[in-house]
Each structure stands twice: as structure tokens, then as C-alpha cells.
Amino acid sequence: MHSRTKELELLLLCSTLHGPAGRAGRVRELARAGLDWTQVLELAEWHRLTPMLAHNVRRWCDAELEPWVRASLEEAYRANSLRNLRATGELLRVLELLESRGIPCLPFKGPALAMKLYGDVGLRQFRDVDLLVPDERYDAAQALLAAASSLKPVHGRGRRSTQHEIECELRSAHGVTVELHCALHYRYEGFFIPARELPGRGHWTELCGKPVRDLPDEEWFVLLSIHGARHGYYRLHWLTGLAELAANRQLDWQRVIDLSAEWRARRCLHLTLTVMAELLEVHADLPPNSREPAAVSRLAKAVGSRIETGPLRVPGERVGHQWGVRLQDTLADRTRYAAWGAAGVARRTVRQAFGARVVKGA
Figure 1 (tube, one colour):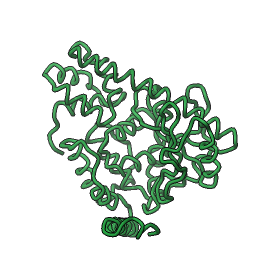
Figure 2: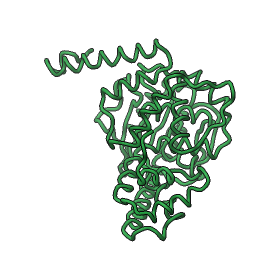
Figure 3: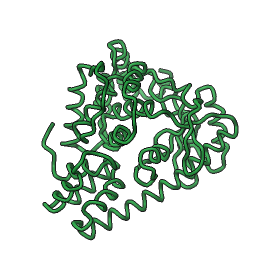
Figure 4: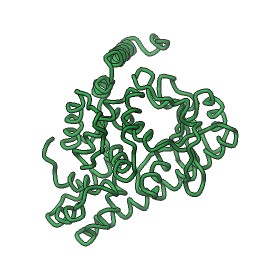
């Protein structure tokens, strides 16, 4: 790992509700030593940790904050809370609509995850509302939502290419984006997530007093590990949510390990656990028989290096494809993923040379 700036260290210390002892004292030390608060705020916004930063610095070093920093954080926290409350209201309305027609629907990430982790939808940043429905009920769900007067397709059409995990994207009159899924991974990836079964399971919780479908914490941990690892954790909030699950919930780690093997996501899981321990000092109490895949240390080093040295931008397509190959558990899965990427490059090359119509059916 590279040496961390004081600004990144402060953000890491303030990125979760639960974490290692002594954080408050170290945060005060850093604040008194002098920080580039503009950089702190930029890092927090990029990593989508501004609400948690605002919450923790208010608790631990409010007296050391410059007035403009305090005002900026308070305003960002209020704006995020209002935006998230609108999203929560839209989520509950859509869930009620789908469930009333007998379509099981599982909220994924967004408001439901914020409440599970923090008990407060304002403490997590999210940009949209994600819903998972069984594949065989997707068309009925999409038609029902498209018929709703307050929801309009973002791209002017209902369904995207079936190779993608996001099948339908709509936007409400209040600007809330609703994404309807019938899968949780791309078809060319090796993961084996039983997305068809997840929405219909009889596990429920409450969101703002309303019953909503839920999953056991162990399943959430593996699903969110896959999601964050696929993105290379270039935004820290994917990792801090998992650290919150690990630190504040009594997880059955043997079940987590077994699920990662069943879903062919052992590299994703162990990458998450390694980076979580190195950056956030949150450690999983793994069973003695668990073994880390050999490639994980190199993957973790790459993640840590990117977080600690930047740049603050979304990785390019080529980098993302190479990363995706390395995440696959088996040689067969890595080969298939690499072949898909090579085919995609060939299609784009032909489009650029001869026009999109030549390869429309490819």
C-alpha cells in the first residue's frame, strides 16, 4: 500500500458508524494538524461518503472545523436527506404497485440498504432505486411500471439489451430513477447468482413502517461484495457498507464462505475482506478452513493503490474489462469473459470503420 494523505486518512476514519477504537481521537488530531478541506470534500463526494463524513466530524471534531466547511457539510447532508426521502417514497409506491399485482419485488441497495446499515436513509448516498423481480415476471412488471403516469422510460423504450443486468430504467416526475432488474450480473460473467429465486423468498423487514422483502445478511454480504469488486471499489462507499455489515451484524461467516463458493465469487469475497481489513481495519472472523485464492493479494494491492493515489475517475473500458477477467474464479470463466471482451472490441472497430448498421445484428 502507498502512503496515505492526511485527507484520505480522515475520510477513511469517518467513513463508517462502527469501526476500530480510537478513531475519534485520531480524527481530532488530524483536524488540528491542518487539512486541505477542499480536498477532503472532493474525496468525500467522489467516494459518496459526504453524509457519513458530515455525521462523524460533527460528533468528533466540530470545534476544529472552519465555518465554511461546517456549512458545506451541513448543506450537503440536508440535500442528500431530502433527495433520499423522495427516493424512499418512490420506492415504497412502486413496491406497493408491484406487490399488489402479485409480482414479488426485492429492493436492492438504495434506501433499503441505508436503513439496514444505519437506520437512517440520510447517511448513505445513492443515485437511483434498484428493484429485482423474477425473470418470468419481468415483462408484467415493466408493463405495469411503464403504464404508471409518473414513470417514464429514460431511453424512450422499456427493455435494454438482454446481455445487461439492468433491463429497464424509468424516471419519476420527481426525478427519481427506478431501475428494474431480473438479473444481478452480466451473462458473460461466471457468477452463479440465483436471481430468479431471491425476490420470492419469505424474508421480510420494515422500511419506514412498511413491510418490504429482504435477504439474510450473509446473502447481502456476498451480493454486495460481487457488486463492489466488479467495480474495483473505485468508490469507497461500496466497501464501507460491507464494513458496516461486518462490524455491526452477527454474520455467519461459514455461510458467507459457502455462498461465495456456490455463486462462484470467492475472489470477489476475499478481495472485499482483504481491502476492508487494510483500509478500514474491519476484520472478519473467518472459519479456520477458509482459504484465500492466490490472486487476491495482487487484486487487493491494485485496489489500494488506486484509492490511495487516484485518479478520481471511472476506469476506462479496457481497464474494466481486464479487471473483470481477473475477478472470475475459474479458468473457463476467465476465458469466456476474455472472449466476450475481444468480440466487443471487434464489433466497435467495425462500427467505427463501416457504420453501426453493418454489425447491428452482431
